[in-house]
Image 1 (cartoon, rainbow, N blue to C red):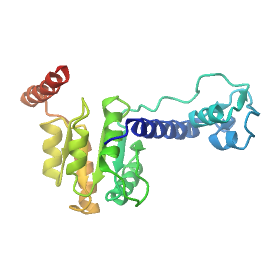
Image 2 (image 1 turned 60 degrees about the vertical axis):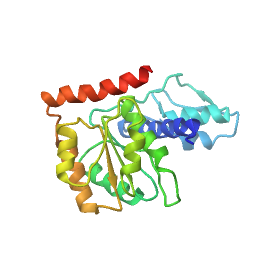
Image 3 (image 1 turned 135 degrees about the horizontal axis):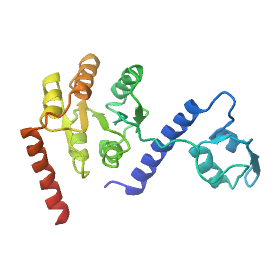
Image 4 (image 1 turned 180 degrees about the horizontal axis):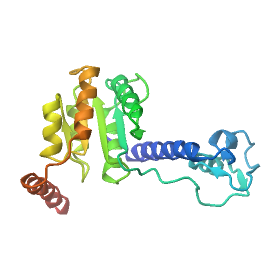
Amino acid sequence: MIDERRIREMVRKVVLRTVEAAASSSASAGSRLVTQSDVEAVERGGNLAAPEGAIVTPLARQAALDRGVNLVGTSSSPAAPRPEASGAVALAADHGGVALKDELAAHLGAQGVAVVDCGTHGSEAVDYPDFALAAARLVADGRVESAIVVDGAGIGSCMAANKVPGVRAAMCYDEATAVNSREHNDANLLTLGAGLIGEALAKRIVDTWLATPHGGGRHARRVSKIMDIERRYLKG
């Protein structure tokens, strides 16, 4: 059974890490950046003075709340931008797909694609539905444009992601299925099977999938019918 509180906390942490990274990159040379580490260096219940114009990251504000630290000289609202970004891609994987997920993150990052990493981050066994759901929620909420989820076969994560309203997940195993899922089905979440394809093919699939636009026309009508089915059962 999926722990909803765990998933919400996972998504919250991913978003906060993304915002913190954005704050770090946007801080000018003359601006002071107050981070989570700065707050954790202050004793519980203490004060942390921030100079005028300082940027306080969301993780720093959360740490201040948790530790009862008073941020002196800062406003109550985060100065960092929202994590939503045009073209941003969420990545997620279970233990069977984490190595390939990390390779894809580096591959996309080298192309300048904004990546939100939903985990997992190690080889310890985890349940793929949890991570498929974390990535799918970011797509459904509009926080990212699309997502890629990797597990051993790609099938289970596809099933899990497709349970989230607004998500159209497609498992692809070659470039032809990548094109079809986007052009015909307007897929917004791609699943891959790390045990079925190699790293080089996975990168080609991802590049093709992201570069292929929806075909519109008769395909748009059919995608609309897919979403009508979803809406029909949501009403029930």
